[in-house]
Length: 242
Image 1: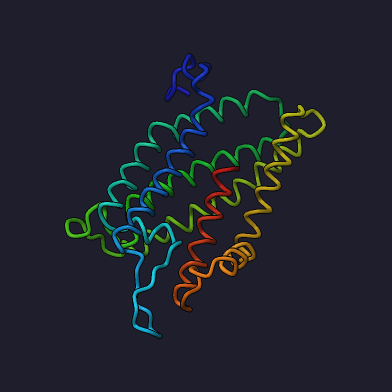
Image 2: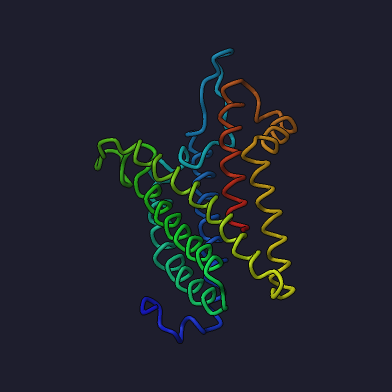
């Protein structure tokens, strides 16, 4: 609790930390994506016709792996982690443990809190070590097995986020009888978000979007790249809303 003074935790600005963190991360993702598209880093040659085709919605890692996108992504995530995500974790701890809870309820709260910390650390790790296995600049710092380390961080981030959402919903179930109307609406909203994430992971929503937008399926390779990118970005969107 000493990380953030009590007077700051109780300030009106404290409630803005979580949405600000989400907004900044979303802006970083969109900015890097637009720059990668504009510079042709999402273009590839069609194996069928030999013409240049564009994968409009690739995975986030592919649009943040080299400069200048890697500069924006890595430095932006690092600043956001220090300035907003860390204080958010302290704020959540202060709020969640104010309520009375039983032993089992407390276990799920603690698990949810721990998984949130793991997910944010993994986010910092995957943003620091890019998909190319480098820190910021490909030609200056090459990390042995960096590509595998990046994917380890990415897998840890997604798994921790999935289980954090589930454990937090379970912890809310223990308070259902004593929950306020706002807490019950929050619970229902989170269930809908998890349903949205499930439809994204299963491929249902990406499939419908690709079928509805012909440029996303111009070639089999482009279709595959966009399918993976849509799945990842929709899941990340769901996590941000959650």
